[in-house]
Image 1: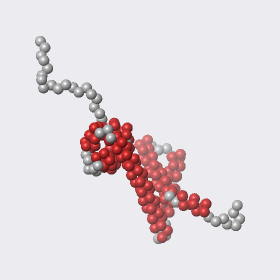
Image 2: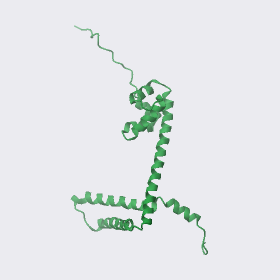
Image 3: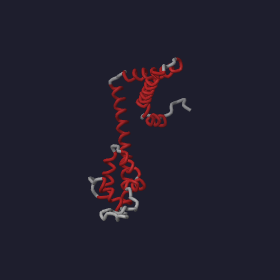
Image 4: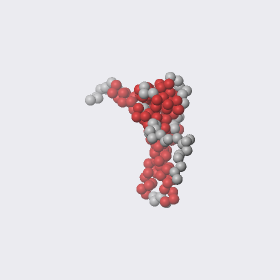
Length: 190
């Protein structure tokens, strides 16, 4: 007939499981994105979140998860951590841009100081090569087997050409605009 269920069988828990990452996505989406993306920001995001939630930087994700699920005050702290993390990322972006501008400026100064003609020659060669290749697409039929290679080459030339423009004209645009507006008018200027 009917056998009773074994005594060691546990009842299934019908309560829904709370996913701490879902909670974090609602409260601190930037940190949640960094934690789930698996990118280099995981360490920074974990450190900021652990510091705000638990008061220590070396907490594990399990400790952070437990705090988010069990402590109602953790949500406010996670929001604070989100703001702190965003500010830190913004500072990094500003610092990175500053380093790039200084690097470009030092390369320009080197070119001027030693009167190096190589970058200028390469810029001319790159411009002729890029626009020559684009023009060639209108006059020559590319075999199907070579299309991917030709398109990749033109894409690389285009990227190099844009980089060359940024080197010569990019970050100095503000200084050039400032110089134009601050220059003293000459006789005959209207």
